[in-house]
Image (cartoon, rainbow over all chains, first blue to last red; front, side):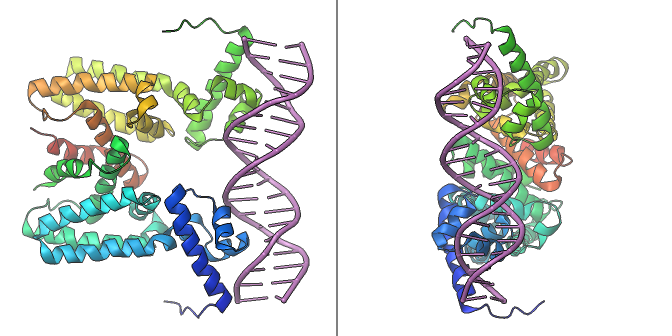
Length: 188
Length: 188
DNA sequence: ACCTGAACACCGTTCAAGT
DNA sequence: ACCTGAACACCGTTCAAGT
């Protein structure tokens, strides 16, 4: 773990302006919002954006980190309230709804649960995978979920369900129906 | 139905060159291949590309129409060889495999099965939906598929499965496993 | 150490001029 | 009727100059 020494005051201010501008832009125009536009909105040179966030993915992740962590935290709330199987189902439902309703978030979650090196090491990835693992393993111990399915697979399948639901209406009205089909298939 | 009168010879030639160049480019670079590059490869002015194919979607559809129709035809072959339930499963499997392995095709199939006006009227859309409808209805008559699910929903869910499988490895090695989970959930 | 913004490359799209 | 390619707008990315 490398020590992060504090940013210079102007750097810190620019960083935060960029995050705010990015959140607005991604929400408005989706994951492909113009980076140049984001820099302009933040009142910052485009080079500054690249200095803080070398790739679009970095910026997307930083802008939505709060939401991702809220989703992860929600897993533990649900685990405390409901029996394991129901907690998992409800969490997946909320995950899919959030993923579809917040523009740009679906792309981020998608890359967070995708296979392939670096993505596995992102903050978003580990946060969301940790949450899924706790719920999945509890449901398996309870015996309401196939023992041969891995947490990451459940996340990917849920992402598939979100995709299907998005195709159906662009919003999320079919999520719970489609998810219940998946849940049937995941029974032991 | 409006009569299509034959194209002028040079127009026809350019049209076909564009299709070939597009197929190569989409296969190489995916659905977002540069249109300018496609025109150049076809040895044609960029305006000509736009004349024949006003939108990227039009070009993508035209370039892959042959493949889509082959997939649709495959449905009837399978229906003749296998019991309805198995024919549907096998067809969905082949659909997902093709959809992932041929770059650019997934985007086309996705938009073909998406909700929302115009897409429903494309040649690709009607072709693939027709095939799915025949298989789904046969399986429902046979009693191996839930009666309350619509063909278009099955297509969307299969597309979700393809998405999940693509997240898993970028190729298609998980398709049959994931599809079998879906099939479980679709039992009556 | 950090910021700025001009500069470059690339792409999509349109349209006047040409056959 | 159809084609060409220059022209324009827009975007991503880099980097020399500035503080």
